[in-house]
Image (cartoon, rainbow, N blue to C red; front, side, top):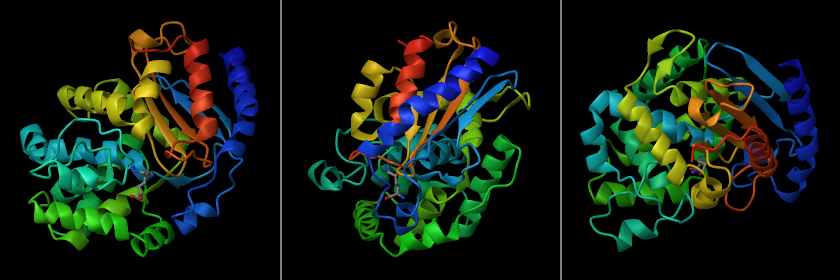
Length: 317
Ligand code: DON
């Protein structure tokens, strides 16, 4: 383990320079101020064994990684068939904030929960009579999983709330076609607050570990969500988790993963794909590198993950 730990630290330094090929998300003012050269990784195995390297104390917001958590919670709150009546599970190949298919494909059902349209619908479905109650339920669910308190970064939320015209347009389309369970402004508040939940790379790795373990928390020894929901989530991560680079990510890396414009990447590695790694019974991987490419994925983060997956022969296919 010690030798592998040294390797991980070396790899972080090896791939850190790739950050120069990307930029921090500029459309959210609070994210634009981040240090683009940061890179961090945490990996956690089912026995609690852990490796960390790089800027691991840095905190950042979940952004689109939150979409997998709210999808899981909505399925638990309302049942799978209720959720799937309101959001499909088809990749689009379009950008994450695209509106085009809500108009061109009637009846305007969002294609999947990993793009903004689908995620806004999912946020509207969450249990709770007000946006605050929905967010409190979500925070509580995450706190159970992480064993610590988490909260919304108000500055990031406010900066997104004030510039959310495109998301607002998506939400009005969804409302017009009957795919929102609550008023537009409430759905948006939940969606943007979930994106602004602050975590670190170890938290990402822990969420990844529970998903890799089909909803079973191996350290708490509890089933946090149903296996069927975990399997569907992993399929969505493989097909839609890395925005419109998901096909290439599946083809050349081959792991269920989800990224966010904060530069976060979460990967869930099942036991059968990690036999040749220092985590032979599976693991969760969390990566943070705020310089993202034009699609929205961390440039240094994707390079680092690809290298690790290749070196340790981690590929679910
Ligand atoms: O909706 C937005 O613009 C962001 N809060 C979500 C960003 C993100 O990571 C990209 N989404 N798929």
